[in-house]
Image 1 (cartoon, rainbow, N blue to C red):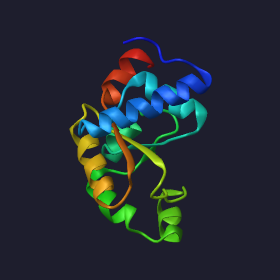
Image 2 (tube, rainbow, N blue to C red):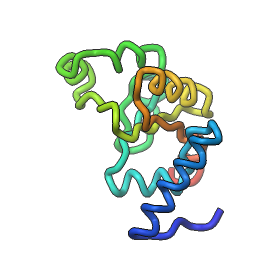
Image 3 (cartoon, helix red, strand yellow):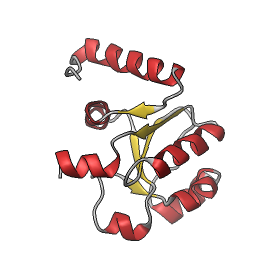
Length: 136
């Protein structure tokens, strides 16, 4: 894969990439896209592995909400979400990136979030395994 353009061209490239992948039925984000989105502050990252898995290592800045409790978490009132997770509840229009160890739970979380109205929900296709290999 070629490196993404930077600046305005990069932003247009990412929007186009999201549109193409979403239209193809693949709401995913690659590692270069993830890096760019996180560096620019244009996405929130969620680790949907178990608390034990996340405690052993996670992607910096990720909020751990195990996939087993994600549906109830995303339906909480904002104050309850903040009290439980020490973070602001995501807004329906935000870019949300979900990941797990291999990709299955991340995809499940992405589909769940989309079904609840989170249109910007995406799965990090490389999952924590790729992150650990390339960034860890």
